[in-house]
Picture 1: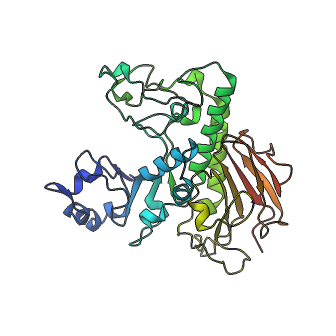
Picture 2: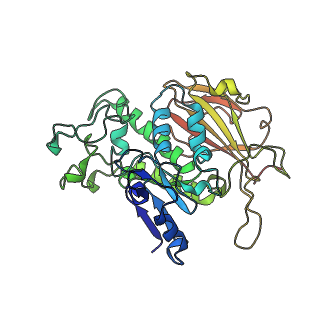
Picture 3: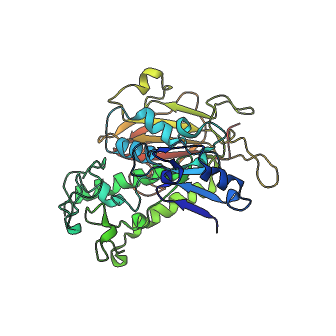
Length: 366
């Protein structure tokens, strides 16, 4: 047994009415010679008052990060005032877990789960459609932070279908390249739908079943490629937090955020409510951990471009990164790694609702 996921875990720490972060339950877990060494994952809320405890579980625990879910959903549906929160979620949510010895893996990142919309439904429905549950559509979450991309539910419009898949690929790319532990809802990789039902626990029929005959092979291939990229590149799964400062042996910081015109993000830029595009540089020499043989972990360096605007946006390579040997490794707008989104890696148009991943060729920065 690798570990346990505790449903409604806040209930286990309640003392009479309040959730107690020093509850005896945690003491028993931490003192057990076996259980304290396995993976402990909390769903950090319950239905009672004060039960929402995201970020408040003790060391050794990882948590389903609902702040990640909400922040990523809001960013990719085009909500305003989302850049700062999106950046925090992408880099592991240090505002929630960067204290008391907790590491990036404390954040279990997810956008969809067994409760709620599937990924396909998230980009296909504005409202829940739970009529089949026979509760007058009153059950299930009503605030889903979703957008139907132009039509509610099934459509034959090829433009809307293409937009939905493009938005879904951008969300999947964000999930798989974020610091922390990605959690993928089974079926999202084959474009599964529950026809807008976001509370299908009571359905043992076509609403909740997997339709293998209608599986989307292109979405599956794209998801597999994302998993391969994450597996092959430790810079996307760091064990320590970014520090935002220069790295010994490199000319660059371990992480840097840029506007689409190539200039560094300022405090004022983070507060621009209308802004929906940005880029982040991840330095492969800034990982600061060692492998099983005690050797320093070094990876390629990456520049990841995000555009949650509905129109294309022109990106310019930052001056401090220009002239390096970049290649475009992944482009979510097309779902293909070899279909270049720009005239050159130095400058070009990034399609709406898309992510581009640029890798520095021939190893890492000098």
